[in-house]
Image (cartoon, rainbow, N blue to C red; front, top):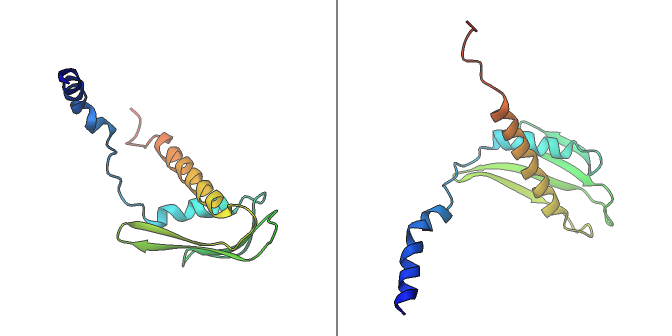
Length: 124
């Protein structure tokens, strides 16, 4: 019994390492380019209409068993941006695939921003 307590006491200081850091909410203006990049992939989607001002787009999933018009719209919320996605039954998990592709595109765009060195002034 004493050993169990000892092991527990040894691991208590490591608990904060497993806690995630709080994330700042993502504004829709930063997420919209990732949505546009995802929809621009002609291998997966056919864009029917896109309104960048209202941040919404109508599209069709290529290769769907039951092709139909789908909608994605970004809405600003207090907790960040809400990706409102309305996809009808297409015979697969197209909603999950779309969200995953947007997430990957967003990560790529953020990685590209970080890797570009900022110009702090003239070279001397």
